Each structure stands twice: as structure tokens, then as C-alpha cells.
Image (cartoon, rainbow, N blue to C red):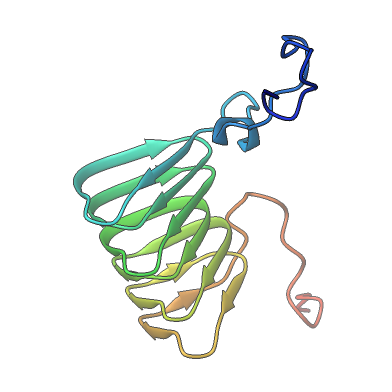
Length: 152
């Protein structure tokens, strides 16, 4: 009888490549990367600080701090002050959001709070109630204001 496609007379080789890959084999293993999911049905309250990318699909209440990426999934409900590098929102967020790189509001997202980031992307159909302040939060030198800014 052949075992996993080998010839009848041959025993399976221990040096051959595995037929199946584990999910971990597809995940980036760079130092500092943390890939975490707060899944649907989960509820968490407190202060969340992390490196890498975190996705929230459940309920979260509190504060979120990271230099990396936070993804608020479709169906997630977050009541928090968020300070991150990149914030991607598909779900519902109540609270102020500050990003040093980018905020993306994806449909069917809902945001009630103030946004602050150097760049914003908003899909049609997103509901946003608050104010948006766009300035370079990364500390890089800003260009001079239009008109040169020179007064005589």
C-alpha cells in the first residue's frame, strides 16, 4: 500500500518536505511582531499596549497604545482612547483616535469622536461624528504655510 503518494516498496522519507504547512509558517516571525486577535464574543476592559498588529473583533473598553497597527474589525465595538501608528476601523469606535501615520475608516465603520492624523482615508458609507485634525504627528519638519509666511 502506498503511503502519501510514495511507491509501494519505498518507506516514507524523513528528509522530504512536509505535505502540510502549519498556520504559524505563514506568519511573519520578525522580532517585535505580535499578531493577536481579540475574537468575536470576547470582551476586554483595560489598557492595551502592544507591538506588531492587533485585531479586535469583540468588545473593548479602555485605552489602546501602540506605535504599530490596530485593526477594529467589522462587528467590533470599541469605547477607547486610541493612540497608534496606523488605525484601521471597520467596526464601531467611540472615543478619540490619534495616529502618527494613518487612519482608515472602512465601510460599514462608525466613529463617534475626534480624529487626529497626518493622513485619512474614508470609504463611502462610513458614519463619522466628530472633528478631524490633520497634521504631521510624527515630528518631521512641516512645509511652510502657503504664501511663504513672510510678513514685512
